[in-house]
Each structure stands twice: as C-alpha cells, then as structure tokens.
Image 1 (cartoon, rainbow, N blue to C red):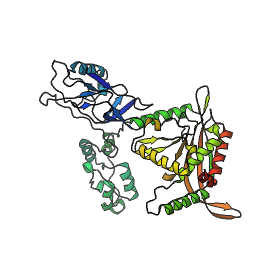
Image 2: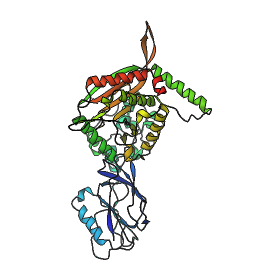
Image 3: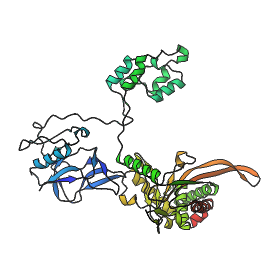
Image 4: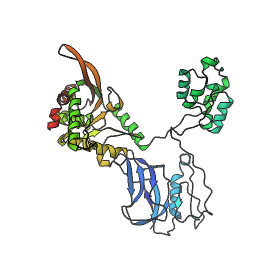
Length: 458
C-alpha cells in the first residue's frame, strides 16, 4: 500500500534539514537500509536510509530543499499504485502557506481523475512530458561569491553615472587615487574588479573625479543587499549561542604561561618520530593543540569540579572526561568529542583528533560523535589570534579558549631574553564553577604545560 515517507530525526537536535541529494529516483526499487538521500542537518551530512523493501513512486521535494522534521518528502509503495489521493493530501497540507513555497517544476504522469496538481515539487514514476504542466523557472539562490546585480540594475547604475564596484574595490580605488568613473569594468555587467584598477589613470594625475549627481546617489537603492539563507548548522549555532549568553552566567579567568618548554618538547618529539620513521613521510606529527588537550584532560582529573555541568536543581559531576574539540568547517563550527581523553597517550590523542577533524570537515560525523562532551577546548592560535574568550557550549560547565604561541622578550634571572608565551582564557558557568575552583584548574593546567615531560610520561 502506498504511503508518505517523512523526514526522520537524524540528529538529537535536528528540527529541519536540507535534502542535499537524492540517491533514488521514481520507479526505483529499494531494499531495507538502502540510502535514499543525503540530508544536511544542524551537525553534519547524514544518510537517510530506507526502512522497508518498497518502490519509489514519487519525490515530493527537490534536492536542495529545506525540509522540516516530519515533512513528507516522497511516496513509496508497490509499482503502479494509484497515488492520486496521497498527492492531493500533500497539496492540501501545503496550501495554508503558499507564499512560503516556491512554485515547483513538476514532472508528473497524467492523473486518472481530475485532481489539481499539488503545490509541492513532485517527480513521479513514468512521467509523461506531453501531459506535464509547464514548469515554472525556480528562483536561484546565489552564494556570496556568485552575487551580481541584474542587467536592469547594472543599466540603472550606468545611466546614473555611478561606477559598478564593490565597497572593497572602492576602498582600493581611494587608496590608489583612482577615479572609478574613468575605469572600464571587465566583470559581470561591467562591474569593476580589482584588476581593472592597475591600468586606470589616477585622479591625482587627471584632476578630481566628476561630481556625484543626486541621481547617482539614489541609484544605490536599486542594488539590493544580498540575503543569505541560514543553513541548518548556522541556525543551530545562532540559537544555542544566544541561549548560552542569555541563560548562562559567564565569567572569565585568564593566564599567560611560559611556552618555551612546550614548544621544545614538541619539536624534540617530532624529530624523534621522524628518525624512527626513516622516511620523508612522517606518519604522526603531534601538534601544540594535542599537548594542550592532553594537559586539559589530566587537569580535569586533578580538579574534577570543572568537569561538571548544571542540571536545573543539581550539578552533574561527571565520572568521565570527554573533551569537545571545536573544529571550524565551511558552514560554521562543530565540536566532536574525544572520549575518555584522560586515558589517551599524546600520540593516541593526536590520532583521534585528526580522525574526528577529518570526519567533521567531510560532514561525516555521527550524532554520537558530537554529543555528551563534559568540557570544551577552542583553539584559534593557528589563525594568528593572541587571545580571546569563548562562549560556553551548554550543558558543559566551561570552555577553554587558546591563543597562539607568541615570541616575546621575557625576564630570566637578571636578563631580558627571547621567550615564548601562550595566553588562555577559561569561560566558566558560575552556577557550577566558582572563581577559586577555576583558578585551581588553570594552575594545574599551567603546571602540566610548563613541564610537558609529564604529558609524555603519561
């Protein structure tokens, strides 16, 4: 019997997702656990698998659509079944909000009875091109790099004597004293791109630029701002961080530690591993961040009060040390969890972090790999950041923000010598961690990182 197939919950925090790609088409038979589609959730790209042996009779949403949890995405059943009633029910369900639904491109077989085509994007098995209604062109959603004004907007700008150029190009023109009214744009619709400025006469050499007319000033309004729809991940980041800063009483503790021995220990370890490998390709190369994660996990054992979270009318003191590691991905940030981090050696930590980071960037993390952390570490040192304060990742009780190792003069004995410093900021949930507790944790962390041989021995 034919039935509607609904969008399932593919991650613990999912309430909608983007149906990124269909792996099946109308008319295909599927077996239990076959991959039907790929769905971008708030955390990663997940596989949408079949629950039954069945046949795809119709696809109700096109690839790239934003789909709510529980929304019908396909019709499945026995080949040749009449699905007119199901199509009509989908049409009725979507009718209350026609302004929010794009008119779809429909490829459908002629219906056995005179039922209006549903207001959803439908692809049916065995479509008839002759009977299909005329498709309406979809409205493209442009990315930031693809955005360009329409031909009409470009013509309006040209008519009003306002050069078509981005704010960045205008800034470059001011710095180079280039009169944009004398530059011929080689970009889309005559847009001036940075490379066009090199062959343009400067305003200093050719006099002041032509005065801007009132019409030219008004022409700005004809170019709309670019509207970038939020991805599921971006929506979740916005919601969770807003909740965190609003509901969690943050306070911050900062230390600046001597990183000379840490850097030296890391260099010696990498050299030793290279000598053992006896090849140009070093299989393992622990980073400074791996040392820091090992030190954090051991400091949490020494100061377990920081390995805790707020739970309404109680504090949860965790008996496991599962460290969430912030990883930047194309669409935002994910926090895969290193399980039982305190039991891992430095090299094991390095391997696990690399494995999770690779899965995160490929959007292949599973829900269980992104949940249940007890403490977070966010490191922006590789981006040249000296120090920063991070937002707590609820329900965890704290997050450590790590900056870069800085070359600075330091005082040793009675002399000023070259040194290396590393700043860290601990963001604490004051409902769970008091200032003295946070200070003890940072003292333990400092001791481990300033004497890294203790991490190598563990």
